[in-house]
Length: 298
Ligand SMILES: C[S@@+](CC[C@H](N)C(=O)[O-])C[C@H]1O[C@@H](n2cnc3c(N)ncnc32)[C@H](O)[C@@H]1O
Image (tube, rainbow, N blue to C red; front, top):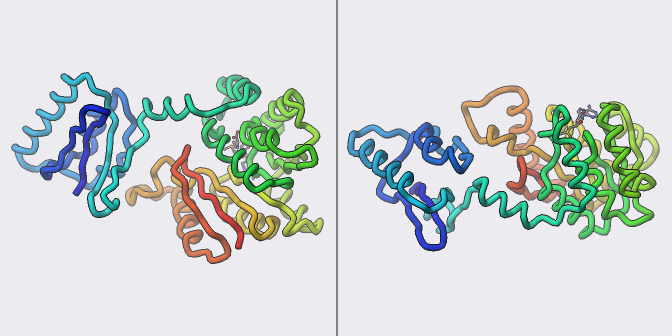
């Protein structure tokens, strides 16, 4: 059973009497305070006038209520009787308040905010997770595919030991200039080996250079239709037990929407499916940012 409701510590208002909402109604309910994944709602419909009446009452209740719009989607059986909390802006603000973002990363984010493509940057909570994975691994040799202005690569470089090395692959010289400036400012430039050019060429050179199996950690965040190719090359470069993390695996929710069939979505969807069946790696798809899959090479 699908339950849509609002929760806070004192009120848990849910629908559990069969009312289903078409997505335009859901979004109109939650628009002021939440972005809602429409995929959950695309197949729902209100057909009877009684349902329409109940929807009207529900809307009224929401408007008259002083409680926050924390949307919970749960299904007793499907989700093992757990409530699955969707990340509303308010809840996400709370998550961000609990991220320990280094000052230099905050400055880089502020500088990038006015630049073209700033939405491509990983979020602070994602960067923190990447840095933690690098630390847990004790990684010394890392690769990033898709640097942009350097937010995620700087987060990684900051936690690498002095002897560590990050190969940073990016084709855009202008955004790389910003990244290089911040590597210098942060005092980590000596750890970053910037490769300007097509990432596939840079990875190929590393393989040809006999570096297969010598890297601990890799992060893929570049051209989405190339993800599979990068993954295959990185699988050669990373050692057994090393990690490959792939960004944007949820692709703004489009991967789960059967009505979306543009080439990028299909490519990511197919990649996710192949990864699911790929016995060469252990995997964990994490709904953080736009979705990241963590792969551990077996
Ligand atoms: C999503 S952004 C990377 C964001 C970065 N990880 C961050 O947190 O700031 C993707 C980057 O990949 C770069 N890119 C796309 N295709 C590429 C390719 N074939 N070779 C190298 N870089 C590429 C783009 O120029 C862009 O800067």
